[in-house]
Length: 363
Ligand SMILES: NC(=O)c1ccc[n+]([C@@H]2O[C@H](COP(=O)([O-])OP(=O)(O)OC[C@H]3O[C@@H](n4cnc5c(N)ncnc54)[C@H](O)[C@@H]3O)[C@@H](O)[C@H]2O)c1
Image (cartoon, rainbow, N blue to C red; front, side, top):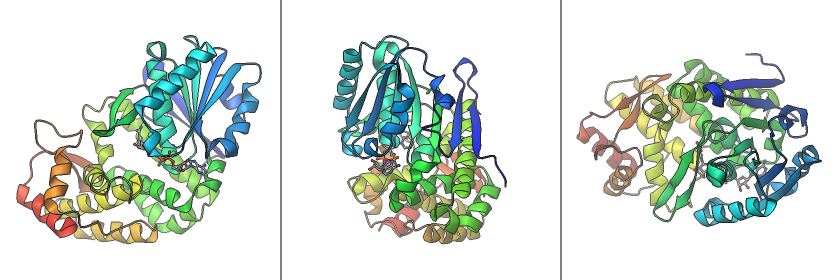
């Protein structure tokens, strides 16, 4: 696979279509994104970890505009409705008009909050995603799901609001902690499993180089992931049907995250465990060969991702799965594999098979 140094993918949504640019040096390459700013007001939202590293690169591109930055504290705990109020206050202070733009500089937490703030101000202003984690580059910055957590659950408050551009500067991954990089890779592996068997083979062959942050390998992995996400979002923006396949491994993963207080696992790590369980269940139901589960397990181990779920108890796991946002009319819809590279949404399956799986993995 060969790609140009900078890859641009379009998320095709008619008038709301937007480019996703992926490559080295993009934050400082202002010509690439400055045109996306329509008005003179810009609020850069970031956090206290990312801003000291990269805000300067962005600031140089904002010369001549009326802009300010809002640096939130780092962490999922700060992805709160209260902080949306803080961001809206910052827009008011800036005197932000309808043509204002918010720039999200950070990982998925900042991206989700900046997007939701943009959706709220004056019933919707522009925002640009500048993702700085692998997870945000391959997943959260593309597709327009925005929001914050509620004490009652993760991401319960939110809106669909598409960015006007995504600028993924792969140089920023140089400072990302190893564990975060591996967690992001789990989502790349997901795209291989649900959509692209060649991508899965390619990750198997190159996992060492990807984890070793080879720039070409990272760019390839991000570009292919974004291509797949863009296709799925273009086909089903509001998750009426197809987009649900992107939740592969997530229903199990969310249960594990919730049972462990969102403290023990990064999201991508919980998704890795969830994908293994979903794969295993697909095999037990005769949908795929057992060797797919074996291959996934080996790949996760090589990627430094967990493969042994915590013993949270089968009943507790089932209870938490039933609280997932994807549950419809009380039945847990599972995303399973029909084959390596093709996912299916399954509403009818023997409950005993799910119970047996949960007992085996969760105790
Ligand atoms: N909107 C969506 O479609 C979608 C999809 C998946 C996940 N999400 C959300 O994304 C969030 C998780 O995103 P995440 O994994 O990016 O976590 P994150 O935003 O918390 O970032 C992870 C950590 O890395 C730090 N960091 C970010 N970039 C860095 C860099 N370049 N160098 C050094 N440190 C850096 C952050 O400060 C943070 O401590 C969750 O809130 C999840 O709900 C949203």
